[in-house]
Length: 235
Image 1 (spheres, helix red, strand yellow):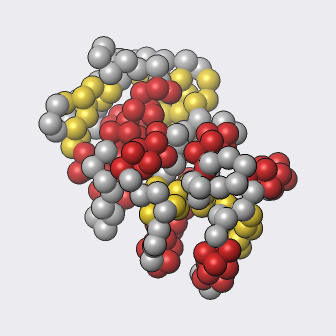
Image 2 (cartoon, rainbow, N blue to C red):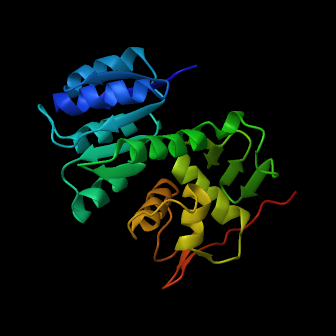
């Protein structure tokens, strides 16, 4: 089945290029230059992945991303001419999974899309984690279902957020370096800018109401990475 792509982009040439190029890799693209049009599409459709520009008519892509994340955890790639570090940080903090500045190489975009979709589809694959459930105080990680329960309620998690939390919790008591976490969630071929893991951990902490200064779950090991330390529920 073809993967469905929501493309929110106001450059007609880029839209035409990507629509044709992605079709060659068996993607079905629905494109618009209007955030309101994209919202109308989302009311009736559930795309597998979204590619968002930042500079848009009506409102910027960051605002659209914020509203999208309030209702969906689909993978999101920000694709924009604004490639400054600050913009990348803002996009990731708001819930983007990846960020590519223009001009870009379409083959790289395909590779990044494929990586994000593989993680999102992992629930239906045979290569699942061995543990069925990782259970801690007020926190349960249902590995096969890729679901997080916090204080008895399901916690919305993007694929990348889930993967980081899973790997930290699975290795409880072991310091996980940023490089190791990057390798586990992206693979060796991925080269993010050096704040990606920090921003993703910050997003997870926010959802868990975990204070970085007095953490209950994720501790920062200065200059190295992160350590998951929580009270396990008795079997």
